[in-house]
Image 1 (tube, rainbow, N blue to C red):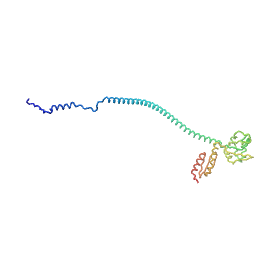
Image 2: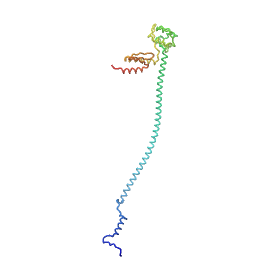
Image 3: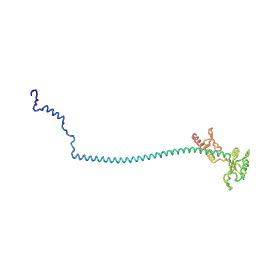
Image 4: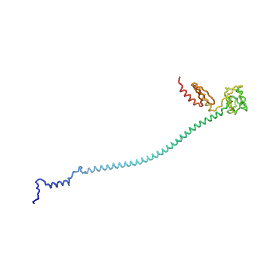
Length: 290
């Protein structure tokens, strides 16, 4: 027909329409590619099944272990709770012990205060006893029953003659008595006589006279009537005389139990032998060795 051109295809070459159709076909339906892993065969299925069984067994074993761990954790929780309760009990006991210790310490402190009070009361009792005995004189050497029935009259007449002291006013006594039961055997030593004089000045006059006194083959000694504690204190003071002389310390023991010392022009009084011992130890430490 006129006006229409017909494309003439050269032999051996594809037409443009065919090429276009082929191009569209490549875009719409891509060619199938080969799978990188081949499909499993029967042996592979068997191996895979055995692996899954083993995995399941291991998972089951892990589950059983977890169940055991759960029971162990429950037991551990119970033990922990029990231990916590025990610790709480121990804490309460420790708190109670602390309170008891505090109470005991309080008692000990109060006992220490009471000890100080007892020592103070003891010293006061000793002082009262010393004051009560300050006018007492102990006579040793009078034969048994020589005084007859009136011992105060006998001493009032005998002592001025025996001591050579003229008492003005006359010698008077508050009380006179002998110590211990009466001794009937002549060979035994006679009992001492304790006399409490009415006036302290006359007591000092008697005690200041040198002993013994002699009259008609009668030997009489006079001593102050000290208490046991006072006598023990005096003996302890007298036992320190050797150390006092070694350290060139002048000393003097006064009634009832007072040690007076002088060293390098300084004088001190001691009423307790323990204090004097401490002083002598310090004095010995400060004394240069020869």
